[in-house]
Image (cartoon, rainbow, N blue to C red; front, side, top):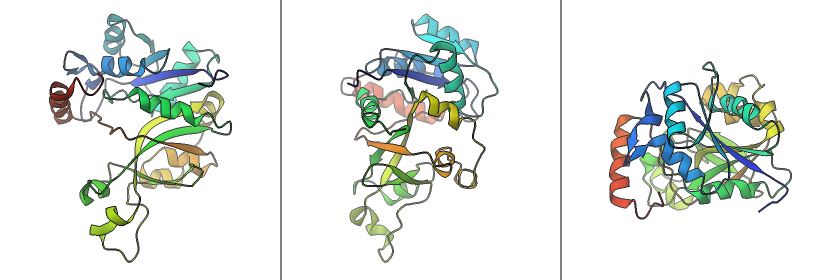
Length: 260
């Protein structure tokens, strides 16, 4: 696919976390979470680099044979850490950087391929993924502010991201929204052209970003376009110790079916 483009995956991985310190090193099944993420990503990318600010994570990645680079500890977000890591290990050789969340051990290669496919369109600057809600979801899941929603144009360009339910179906009872409307959950994976990544890390916070606490709104407010790819694989992140318990149950019961 796209012989004139090359891709590098970068996994930002911090040890410090308010809700779950050290989660990249938490054991899922038989190996650390960060190793699951790395190995899943390698199914779709020739090169992946873990970007960390902690020697414990650095050493763990080296032990399982992964590529890892130390980055500064003062980055405010994973996007900034991705840029530092890219500049240290790639030297401008790769065209597209794929930012893989370090707490998504069940990431599927098809999701990465969907991001890569977005760059078949030369005008694509940034790409991300969405997952459709269905009428099997509950209203509580749709209204969950920790699950951002996105609306996009027929040309698959993101128009707005929000923690609120968008679109709002006027004149339709909330209980019918999932049956009557089309809703998409944002999956927090991004890919960027190298020059665009450098540009967006220089931007100041914007009003919409501050209001919603969603970094991608900064890019939209500054006129950048975000192409959307659709995935039908559910995203299962690990944010808390309770999430890890659930993930271990999933791994134990379904490890032959989730391609780990």
